[in-house]
Image (cartoon, rainbow, N blue to C red; front, side, top):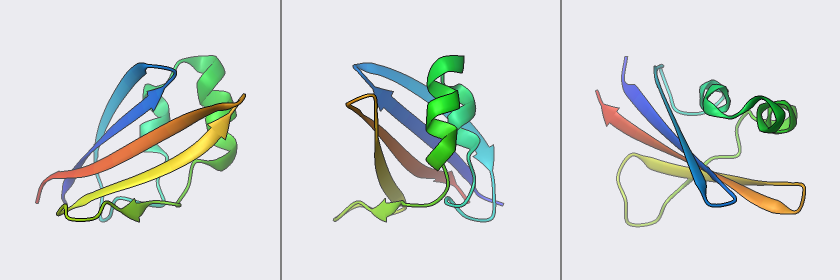
Length: 80
C-alpha cells in the first residue's frame, strides 16, 4: 500500500501525519496530528472532500473552516 503524507495548516502552524492506505481519502489519519481542541472540531468533518491540485501528480487538497479560520490539508502520495 502507498504511504501518504498529510500536511495540515491552521492559523500559521503546520501538522504532519503519515499512514499507509489503499487511497488518500476517506480516512482521518491526518486529524491525529492536530492538538486535542482542534482535533475535536476537525473530526466533525474529516472524511473526503479532497480535490486534486492542478498540475501536480499524486497531490490532493481539502479545506474546512473552523472558528473562522481555514484548515488546509494536503495529501501527498509519498511512495507506492
